[in-house]
Image (cartoon, rainbow, N blue to C red; front, side):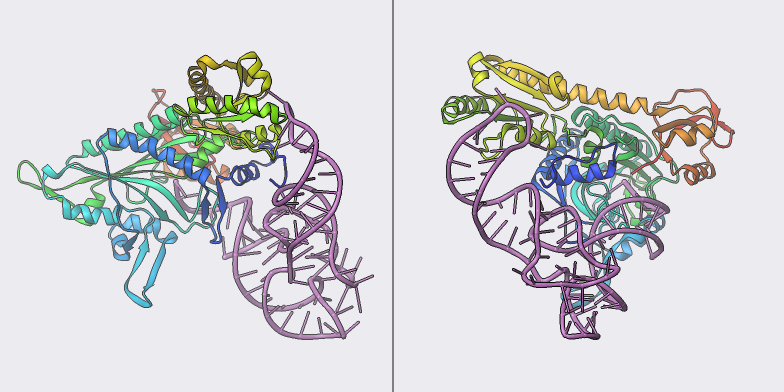
Length: 478
RNA sequence: CGGGGCGUGGCGCAGUCCGGCUAGCGCGCUUGCAUGGGGUGCAAGAGGUCGGAGGUUCAAAUCCUCUCGCCCCGACCA
């Protein structure tokens, strides 16, 4: 650690973000522009995110598979909106084995096309449906401007691709996945999200309808934390995914796709992080409990270490733990170090604790005295479990309170322009592209989503004053 | 692609405008001793040819030309 103090969020939020990512050793810049190296600590967090999602996918009948990294260029061209959406950001392989290729290969920016092609081979009958496949993969999009985790040329994600016999079923799948995502975000990541429909402008290239969950970051900007798309029959028609139904009639299938990426790591960092660094949600944190032994000399050490070992053995059965037995740094250094890395709970065990038969605990989510408590040896596991549960709850509550305090219901357009500088506006919108575009032009705020949860009734479009039947969130976004 | 900034030991920087002895400083690193309940102290060490190429000059980190790369801001985007 070259400098000791982090830049504070108030001083410069994006600088704070970069420093936290680098100094907590989540990720590092790579020799390739726009690409990052995800370091073991960051990858461990991602692995926990993966497991958390994967469990839910499996529980809802999905299976995993792996499709090729390379996609023939012609495949992308089969769906008009899709190719138009992605063309500017494709990485294309033109040579292989020293030879110019007959047809250039695109490094997948997303896999609807190649998976759609395979589905056309596999699906012949209504009995073959639904197909519910997910893949964990890396994809490449040649972005102009990149940020660690939030936007990199290459990123990791899961992409689910499903095919169904009916429109209703495919729409239900799209929605079911969004519910699953939102459940993951709130229950495991302690990230409050707003699920809703994307506007026509903001929807996925080639989709009939996109839905997303939006989260508010610590600077009040919005981050799309997961998307689910209803493709209608667009891709089925482009790739000839057809089946014979019960009445022996040939039909196009209805498809969906949905994804959560390593960007979610950024969402966790910016939802919970503070001026001391990361604050990781207990259910996903690579290390849930760090134990710092405190010993002034060898005599202390001989008393403290056996106790630490015993505690570590016991807690290790139920929690992801780490004993920081480094002798070259002081306890104070370790406290700051693990706070930077966002470990939810720290236990201190020193001669004084042992004398009193207690363990000192410090919560990451509550700095200073407020987060300190003493635990007892005989009930340690239960007490730690309870604390981690409380930490999760208080992290969620804090994030939700922050978000709600920064959502406004502006009374007119002038007020909207003002509130989106430091929050989200929740306003009636007539649904027209023109109003949306004007608002974006004036404020840089875009429609984030039209939430499923609506107040009901009618109002007037915040921009044009025309009758509106729905409210939308407008915000500056990552 | 437009605007801005920056490339000097592992990291962060000073030195560049007004060329000049063996290129400094802080952190980190190594070793030793002490220390250890909120970012330890002292001491001794190791480590750079100044992004790259060309040029000007007795002399270039410093001036000139070209070039490569990165970061930040904007338009585009998970």
